[in-house]
Amino acid sequence: MEENNKPVVHLISKPENMLKTVYTACRTCYSADTPFNIYNSTDDEEKMLKLIERVISSGHYSTIEHIQVTFAISNVSRACTHQLVRHRHMSFSQKSQRYVKEKGQFDYLIPPTIERNKELKEKFVNFMGEISKLYCEFTDAGIPAEDARAVLPNAAATSIVASLNLRELIHIANLRLCSRAQYEIRQMVKAMCDELIKEEPWLKPYLVPKCERYGFCDEDKSCGRKPKLDEIKAL
Ligand SMILES: Cc1cc2nc3c(=O)[nH]c(=O)nc-3n(C[C@H](O)[C@H](O)[C@H](O)COP(=O)(O)OP(=O)(O)OC[C@H]3O[C@@H](n4cnc5c(N)ncnc54)[C@H](O)[C@@H]3O)c2cc1C
Image 1 (tube, rainbow, N blue to C red):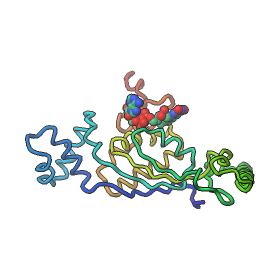
Image 2: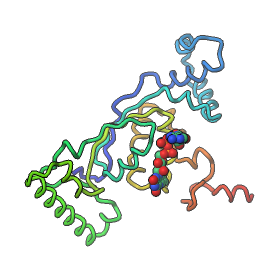
Image 3: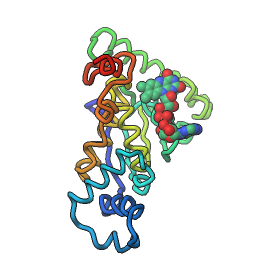
Image 4: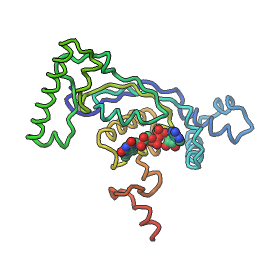
């Protein structure tokens, strides 16, 4: 188990010249010039960013679908990846509980609310131990891993390779960085965004919770970061 109980996320693949590629896609829509000439004749970052912001703000999202990125993610729970795999414009390859048999205590993640409570944490850890014993009893008796896994919990640790285009990443960031999203997927998506922003700082204004993009909160219960829409309407 990783010591810090936090998702481990690495950006393992992204295209060269992301900014220029997105700019070329945007500019091609409004130019008599060929995309290849546009690509080769532009280096003015400020000009590129200005056009990209205008195009994205107008909802012209196909321009950001040309960028595909891949993350290697580990030390997350099955509960967390179960939420991630609900996103339909992504590709996944996940550690299989059919083909990878647990040997001894399986790795698991302890939710911070339980981690902070000494007594409940002890019960949690003991219960994971009991599950592990039962799992091993089953596999030792010849039950295949694909059936023994029926007793494994949502907390079981997993690894996943996840690929997606920039449009989907922005969509996921807007949803899952919201303080109303579950803490673990929020941490994981934050780590994905931070990894990409390290390499492509121009993406920072897009990889934010939805309220930052909209300027208001559309959740029933607001964290107070931005005013609720009806509060703005009442002004
Ligand atoms: C805070 C939060 C709580 C949630 N709670 C629950 C819950 O209690 N139960 C539950 O089952 N799920 C829950 N979900 C998951 C949610 O219902 C979606 O399954 C998940 O967010 C992925 O769908 P998406 O709309 O974000 O789009 P994605 O699958 O990421 O696709 C991106 C966009 O593509 C478009 N799109 C994709 N597929 C279609 C389609 N078939 N038809 C039309 N347009 C499409 C939509 O515009 C969509 O927004 C929750 C999600 C969040 C963020």
